[in-house]
Length: 265
Image (cartoon, rainbow, N blue to C red):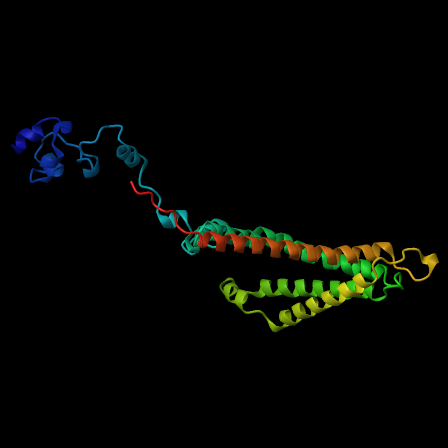
């Protein structure tokens, strides 16, 4: 039987029979028979010519993980915005709880960039206006001082925060979110107290005299800048507080909502 198989054409040799005990192609060549081709892969036996497995084998093996991605590169992080949204969806107790987590998440990512930009630009403007109009408000002599000192501490706080972030290692950032340096804590407390004192100085002089010829006055640009700066802070805090209260109340109401009664068939 082996001789009859080898005398036939090479494409008629049964690869299964060759593996199951019949002479191999090398032995057939040694005894002078017609040379035969090596058997195809077991994965491609009895597969049509256009099968995807045949196409993949023709193109060669796919590249390894080490060839595509650097071996020393860390795995993809779940700290992205999409990963945080999925985590918020898993940990949420309901629809409104999920919406609340999304609002907090967006305020911490997109809003954080805007807030950082504002907290750098606004203190610089406070310092400039306070220094330019330092002696142009006899009616409220502490208003330019409030702007000058508040802006200086605001710039110092941002520079201190940025320098700490630059020196910080990536693995220590989660711990730093929980633990804050005593210097930043003192600066935050001073900024809060200084803001309250500045509000008293500005609102006490409302609305001042803008004409220097009528006695004590205050420069209009200086006073309106300080007034609307403080007022916008209170408006922003009021809107945030009202929004969080509305979401919390809606969440409580929908959590206490009784389940729908099943109608008996």
